[in-house]
Length: 107
Image 1 (tube, rainbow, N blue to C red):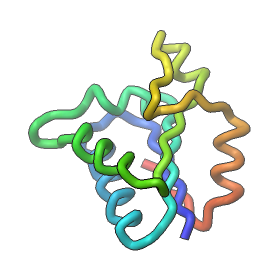
Image 2: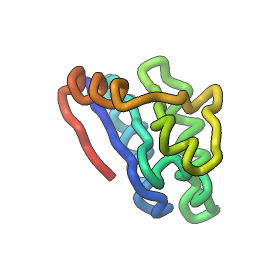
Image 3: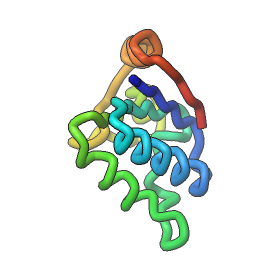
């Protein structure tokens, strides 16, 4: 299955759970893409000992079936830049993610 996960908020527990689900899905043999939009582009700021988002992200990116995209406009509004692990994307990329996915989840 192709799973698209859209994260639009910075709540640490929510982002942590989104990545936990993404990691579980990959272990089930699914292809997973995560699109960060709005506040979601700042998801890493909420990482803590209790909600170790960074650990979940690192695990996620070990898979060839995993990809993280971020809304370029949302990054620019926050004076942030894309990274090697989080690619700058556009509404067109979000549309393509939705179009090609079997299921879409929003967090």
